[in-house]
Image 1 (cartoon, helix red, strand yellow):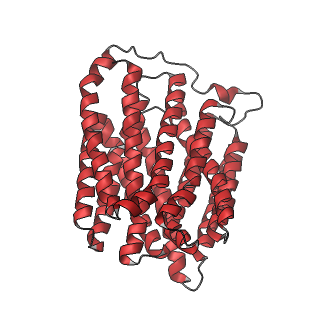
Image 2 (tube, helix red, strand yellow):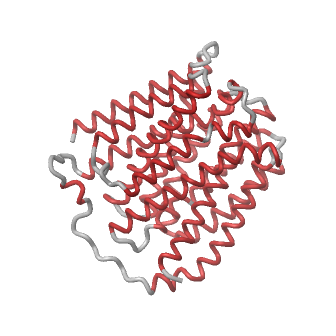
Image 3 (cartoon, one colour):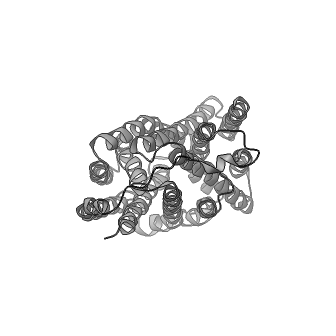
Length: 394
């Protein structure tokens, strides 16, 4: 087995992990709606609860992988995730048990992502890191799009219980694949020379007219990415409500409400091969503005075609912001498990803040169906102001 073949195995784990996690968490909200009558406020509260745990689990998950080994972290993560899915299926009629298991899921999931992010960049020079980050982003984004697109049909055909047992099967398959890769990992690395250290980690930063340091771009991207996830998880939590408003079945929701996932995948593919956006503030700023406008349009629109068009812009915006955060983390910093954990912790902050803001707004103003939209949009505007402040400071 060659070094690149080993990386292909870790990319396969990345794709499977995304499929399983997306099937579960995206369609859990449909399950809660259909079985327990959860509306937008309830689903936003569940998402905020998950995001709050995610913040601390991501940070500690990255540290665990760095201290005890990435492969051990993955083995524990896949086994634990499979167990959580099986327990969720057995306790599917007890809402309190399901919510507790959402919290457990949010912890053990973070044993996987920081380790996978580091493994795909292991033993790579700077150019190799850029290549691996591109493949990694396209892998998980494509899998997420496929999961949402097909998930509605699976929900209708296999029954709502598939939200739990289908991911359980995928997590078990990942565990077996990891055992197979583990037997070959050390031998492959022993035959792979260490990459030469580059003196200049960010050649794009020396472009004519560039006055902002790579470290400043890293800070700005780390600020922007949580706000992208504020928007993303607000949208995911209220998607069953949007489907109900548009009279869409789960199958139809999977088709028409998955388009932003494909928009994000397309953005990743373009950004991977075209590097003119590296260390250019206008691209990050433009994506942030587009994020706010497209989210508000999706949540407020009364016509399905408008929701479809806005989703494509939303996908492009979230793609550029996420790619910026991960690329600068790996390019300016180190491709390490702990650094990947910090990247995931910022994501958790967004998963918590957006849905929490929306849920509180709907609690304080239950007579206003759009209270969550205006509250989250206002929160995103504060993030845009923070981005401009950071740019001015540098």
